Length: 181
Image 1 (tube, rainbow, N blue to C red):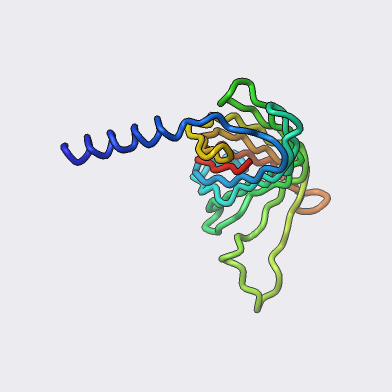
Image 2 (cartoon, rainbow, N blue to C red):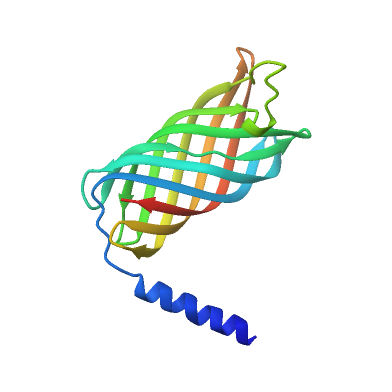
């Protein structure tokens, strides 16, 4: 119990001393990881969401445009499948720490890179329209340029396997992210 109390006091002091005002301007780069639920074909599976990358440009202190590339892996029919997207997006800060982000683009389903057997050939890529929405809270700022946040995200996509066969997929994730402004 004493060790837990000491750890909490140390973390609290780090969080309190690290709360600087952050300057959001110019290029930004973000990375996040987490987990959630993947819904597909009236079935759901747990999902590991990694990597999630965002690259963009802050037009002003509150508004940024960028490319959001969420990804994640779940097991469907005893096979690992990656449900990902490339979404041009808008990110807007509602308050100093709260933000919302939304984008429309291309969703895709494929074999995760670590399961690809290139001796058989390249993996199949199935694509379709995609939409993503995220809301996050930056709970830690430091050195005027770095932020750590917690975010929730919804990723929706219609995947076309061929002209007559498609599926709708959705992913709901909770993520911890790191952003450099």
